[in-house]
Length: 297
Image 1 (cartoon, rainbow, N blue to C red):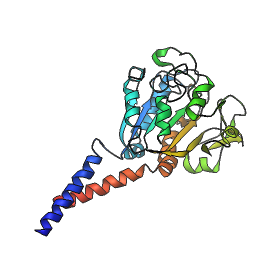
Image 2: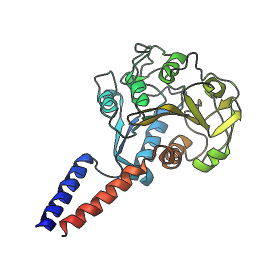
Image 3: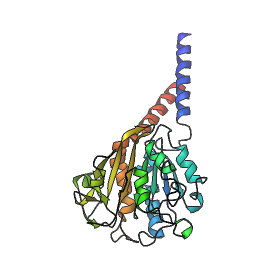
Image 4: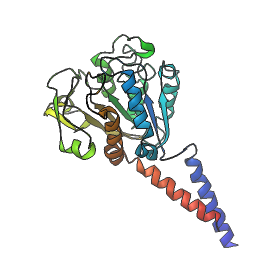
């Protein structure tokens, strides 16, 4: 009788754990959204954006880390009632780090209404503040939208400044000849020297709530790509913002396009190590083994 009660208890625990992972189709417990909408074509072409999105979505390492991967176009990312806005709000404060990639280099109104209509408390700011991840490539992060193929009124420098909560923050052109750092060589093996048009002004992060990791730099104050980690923890972890290869290159001169494979390597190596994306994968694997053992009794 005691053995039956014990087994029933295990079954209840197992079923409860299974409910926790409900909706995870494959891979880990975290979710990934890619916005590959209309581009500012002088910075990255639509063809390059779509190709890089395919590279990211189809990579085996990415598939293993994320239970759900969704690609959003303009029709699903316009306004705070859109599918991307709903996705972001659903994945804010859910207890796990989720990721948004703006693969086209523009910021849709679903995440940050232009021009700076919500300087504090935008969907993307709350997403990051809760402990999630935003990755941008190509154009100045948060600068404007091109949804529907029409340039929006500019957020300008204030877009990024408001998301980071750093007054006066700029990614304006300065020294741009970037050379990989040791961290870049370690975490992004495909990284090569390049010229950035929108570098991080690293000195502006001193004394803020953010710690920087720099993967390439022209000098101590000019970097790209780089990533900032919030010192303040939210329900989902510590917020992370990466701005990568912010350069006016409709087609990347080298193959493969670093804005695709480089993002994959960044996520699979640095982000997984920092945000512990694999933890959900391991927990799910253990759960599957335990549940199979219980059913075999």
